[in-house]
Image (cartoon, rainbow, N blue to C red; front, side, top):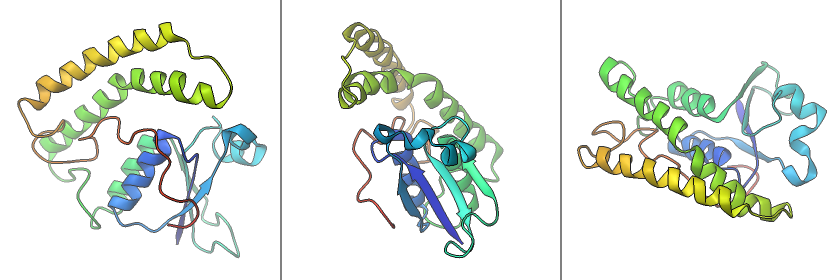
Length: 192
């Protein structure tokens, strides 16, 4: 079985999927999808990921003879992270507290908080980094507004972390580091 991760090397969602795969010691093949070439909107890609976004995970048993032969395709970064963390629970560190209802509820709380409260960071990243790459001007008013929102959200995280070691309690889990990782490409491209 081969896992193929389609993603853009600078995409934070792609990088988070790479982090989870590496934390769980799961071999995978990374296939770079370049937005500048429109590869994420190509008909073959959109047939697998209807929103034309990354990352995209495909499980294949016989990569050379029958690409994508078992038909399992998963998109949306958080779904991919949870799938990998659950399927490979016995490998690497425990990233999701399986079998403990209260710890799992705290994990889900942290996951929901991350999704709801780190959007300003994504907007800032888009404005300050991605727009430059595609030749557009940064909207500094949008950046300022989202810095203020993010600052308020980070203040709340400071309160949470003053009472416990990690966002999801006292155990380091998948959502213990909200916003991980920053805007750097995953190390290398190709097979990992």
